[in-house]
Length: 212
Image 1 (cartoon, helix red, strand yellow):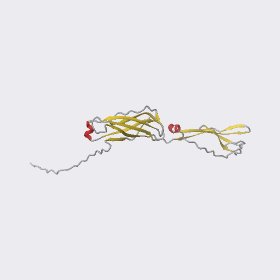
Image 2 (image 1 turned 60 degrees about the horizontal axis):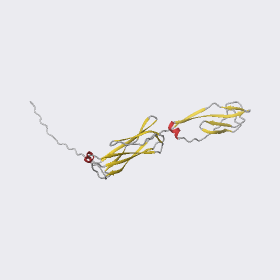
Image 3 (image 1 turned 90 degrees about the vertical axis):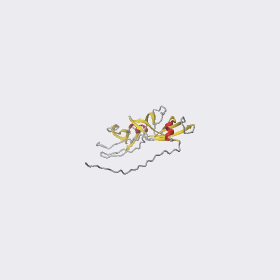
């Protein structure tokens, strides 16, 4: 109470983010006295996506039947935004299931939003061996997922390597910035374990010098 008279009616709080009015203080708030009103508010997905929330409140009462309204006051609470995508690449089928030229491998790519903000599409999967098709999805909310697909036909080069491994990442955007997952890979044959080793040896050579 920054006035010079004691309030004769309860003080209520109007907040643009909270429905109705809140009780701020009973009648009888003397000049120089103060009361604290507390209210919890649960963050919405829209507030997280927007980067925070600003709400404005006023205190209201009456004195001798006339309304008394405070100047508004506002506070902004920023949100902690963690945009994140995860891709899970899986080999579904190999037809025929033989590691040979012409075998067709079918893949699925499960894309999940594991962050706390809505990631915007279009979503594109980059695979180092094939072209991936994804459904037209405008956005992916936290906890949401979608599935993309692709096929790859084995070549003679794959046979020379002894297996085929392809790696994929998925990308969307948040706030105009790209959001890209960590890579995930699939190998065929599924039990293949390609490995290389190298052994380096050195031979000491004699040096002959001729002086004139």
